Image 1 (cartoon, rainbow, N blue to C red):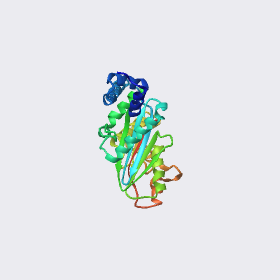
Image 2 (tube, rainbow, N blue to C red):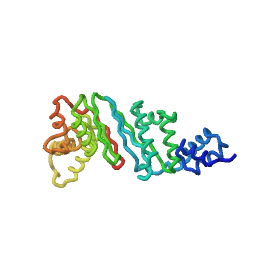
Image 3 (cartoon, helix red, strand yellow):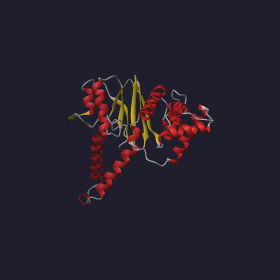
Image 4 (tube, one colour):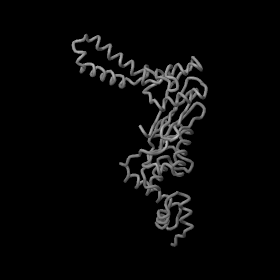
Length: 277
């Protein structure tokens, strides 16, 4: 059957696929638009499989905050050219909207969430890969629920953070703490919740450094242990959010800064993701 330019344009509006892809899909489907859409989607899966080993170092990190819940997602791609296209931005935002609405348990669960057109997140990402010929991937997803949540997204949309508090704090303080997380990348909220494996790794490294220092030869074991623990304390001060120097005033810690607004306020958790780390 004859495939008209109008038919091709109609399918292109439905799928955002290239003109030739649309024409070929319509020809294969013998003019059936529903079948043509599925052909284009199947092509996307094939392209995705062929490009599975490609790196996705570009993309968009997006945050949504609604009341006491928040999500942070990243849709990754291969080039900044694709990440700047309207179709890519629309897909990334639709995934973020679906995530905040459904609040799935983890990244794998988010892939199964359906978007407004009835297709799942995973299916839409595969279809987008087929349209551009470039690998797309759901690179990150995390969610928080708390009495109050602050956010910060850097203007390049490649790094962002969400921070949960035990109670409402002034918006400026919440934003500044989220900026602290974004820029300083702490390992945990405090010393108390620093991952055990991180603490053990750091302590082992310090002990090794001390053991290899000729000046420490023959020193009492207890002294060497105390030196290692002292180095660990410095690590906590530099790498845990509450103890870090506040980026806008190095004379106070982040916890001290929060307490300028409310002595009972504290950070419960944070999530951060960056495409550039």
